[in-house]
Image (cartoon, rainbow, N blue to C red):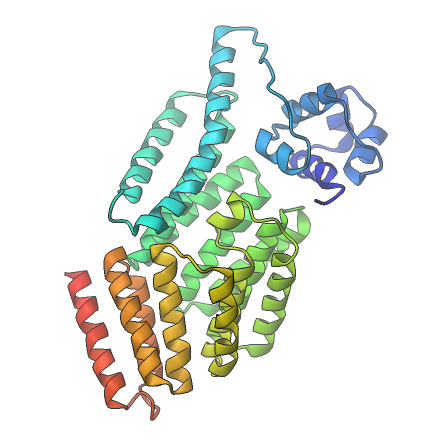
Length: 392
């Protein structure tokens, strides 16, 4: 853990509120120099009463305190009125529920969307949160808004699976607007990365890279978590290899790899698909798209070993990127075997996105000797039939 994680957290939340160190010091009852020393890590804040008071002033959630090494014991909430007590109770209930929204991604991936209607549940939750925010104001407003932002992010991911790009972009725009309202640099960075992905899917390269540059500027201006820095560089790597820029891809994926080697995987990292295996797979996929599939095939034995068990959606995606590498290298039989596995899984998940990824492979190889092979032509027909069945 960063030895000054708590100091950086205090500075980030102070800046979110637009306060100078003097303003925070006045509210807290200590000197500006004391605040400065805390933020720079020159003084340690060990008294629970002081940590608790500072967290209350800045509105730092309990889980962020824990991630910075300041886990707090259960605290009795003192209230001066019934209304204030209701606000504090709602806040205590809503903040842990944010993790429930993040967990919905794991549930969605594990059951392929067939057993539990995750998207329908998320839409209902978003409506309830909107209704609550229209009726109530108070201490619970910020955590409610933050949970609404994560709900829209997950709805955006669901839309991507149906290749409903405009719908996904709308969800990510709501996510960004909420981040602006909260003044939350981490949430804003994540929303910008998601928007960049949508523009890339539309082949709006300039708009996509501008969003990525804006996300990078946020990350440089404010202290953001290590995993989110990794998510940023992984997204940059994908942009570069899709654009065909090898040097940019290598720089970005090396940054992401360095971060992945140095973090503990938690719920945030898992929900954003950022760990050592995910980064290795993006590196392999980049090599394939840059016409270096033999390098990709050197990586896959390692990812097989590191992640022997996968969710339905993860296995679907993994089969397809391996199919691409084998087909690009000219091992058509093995490539088609993986492609057929991917097609079957995509039908189970009802994910047109993964089928279109195979279609794009077929189109790209279409002008080459590999693409003109009879077996590849037959695969192309199966891809087309699968898309037709899924879009009826």
